[in-house]
Length: 156
Image 1 (cartoon, rainbow, N blue to C red):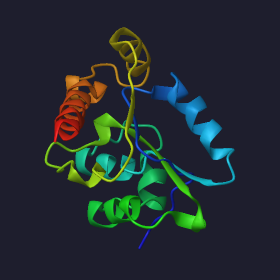
Image 2 (cartoon, rainbow, N blue to C red; image 1 turned 60 degrees about the horizontal axis):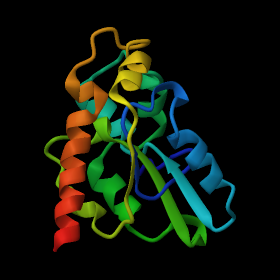
Image 3 (tube, rainbow, N blue to C red; image 1 turned 90 degrees about the vertical axis):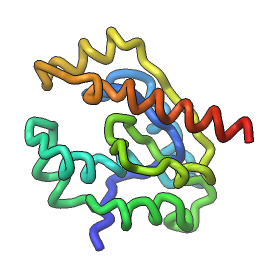
Image 4 (cartoon, rainbow, N blue to C red; image 1 turned 30 degrees about the horizontal axis):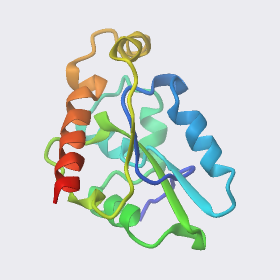
């Protein structure tokens, strides 16, 4: 089993946080400075890279070589016991890493916070390494799906 996440987080999803732009990275860094918190950065990235075969993404080879890409391993790790006997498991996700066929019920036990960037800013940073991004590359359709899921869950 390859679970080699550099750092780890709990329930924060960001849209288009390319090259560390936006609020997600400083928020994550704040959480990782807490002694009671285990922080995980983009745990679904390896799966996204493998499934999309987007070799133009930053760190493609290194990510696949050092991080787990199987959802049947990653999701139970994200929803299981908090690593290192910590009290808080902070996970920073990017919505474009969420496959369309992934059921979202695995997030039901998490506390979710959506950090949403202005779509213009998302595109400005995204085109720096991906000249012709699609809507799915921005993560906006996936974020809307996630938002609707969370909204419906709150109504139950």
